[in-house]
Image (cartoon, rainbow, N blue to C red; front, side, top):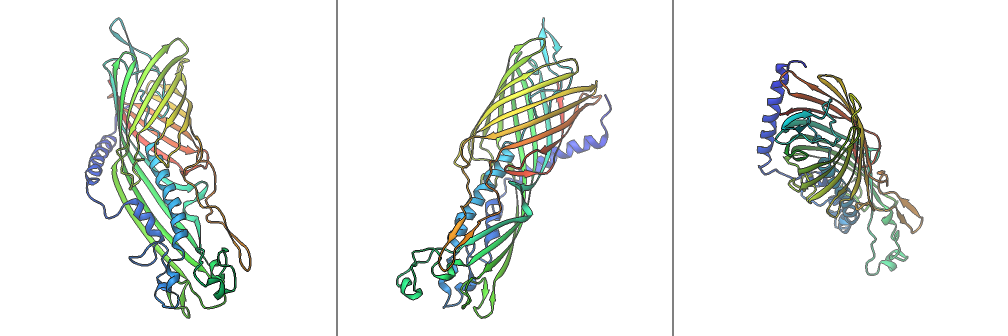
Length: 452
């Protein structure tokens, strides 16, 4: 064991006060929601709708063209907003909370507590042992998540392409000498808007958790996350005209002196409770080489959905836990199912495999691979490629975001250190091992635990 540095004590107290302050601030009304922040990246004229062309609308000869890209924006932006809402909220709500395992576990033999573990246990995985009747484990941790990619595409280089709506109005066939019911006639329906996004999305999660031994082999646990989410985005849009005639689509100016490029910046922050978790674990098998338990979890929809702090639905999770002990080496295997409610959510199979190893009487190494495999069809889909006919045929890809399953696979590597006062210091880093969904680069976690 080693003494607790004063700086660490101050950091722990500061973390508590920061969390309390963040929770207090979350009660104040914000100027705009995170959903509105993302929506603002598609607005290039003050007080207008996304992709409204105020330049076209300001000229009598072209005013009807001011709204022609709004339908495409509504479809693409709806998909994008739905994806980000689901991805951010799911990442926060499903972020692996600290294990229910205490740094020390006990079983009562003849009324006397006897230790059932040598190491301080895993960090994000679960082992079968319980804390012991009448005993408890409390802790808190801080995690920072800097999202960097969306399905393998850098958030600084997201591309979207918006197409013109199909304009078929009375006498259109006569005026343009063609079949206006065919997409691509008139010729100006080939005009495009190319938009590039540069997004900076960061989440800070302050998690407070506690496990109580309500019976010799049954634990009741709670986890309360306080989340601070920040989004800072920039967008650059460019109109691509396809006619050699008078320009009809412009952000500003006139057809003779058009402005075909525009930019927007939108940012905001949100703070509040995430989705609360209640967990019950029952240890039902114990032997010299194998222990088994089951865990049930309920996530309550306490996080605000418009700010992406929660899923807005009650989600359930069941887990089968197997663990063993071979001297100082303790492997574990978790397998379960997540039942997620809501139109934008998918159920998922969950697997955690890893070990914790006692390096010294005061130090434990914890290593895990965590996998969450989505079930069923993706409820959030981006628009399909668009075929535009007419004088020539063009195929337009609506985005460079790939169509792929949003499975999540992470590697976890961390340590637990026990101090002279009995406090356990937790350090960990999560490393993404695949590209599904909205992904960070490295995710550090720092925490403190205490058992008694």
